[in-house]
Image (cartoon, rainbow, N blue to C red; front, side, top):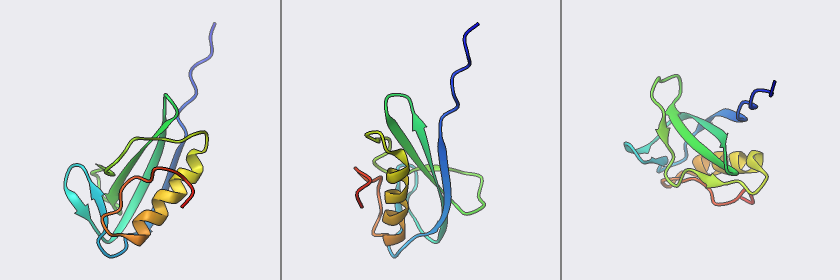
Length: 97
């Protein structure tokens, strides 16, 4: 019997968007208190989704998914920093923010 595939790793944090907010594919810029979710995917990439804090709908952070080059945690932290900065934040290209 083979083992089940491991569940994808996931990071989720609340973040206050900086001036100019975060850019999403579905609705454009969103601002205010947000939640950022980063999910590791097959093929060494991560997907970034954002939502208004405590809302039901999730939106794709523009530029997602991105390759994580073996360090998805750093990429999640870089995405948090980008959203805090605002300016229509998009998915970071690397974790070296």
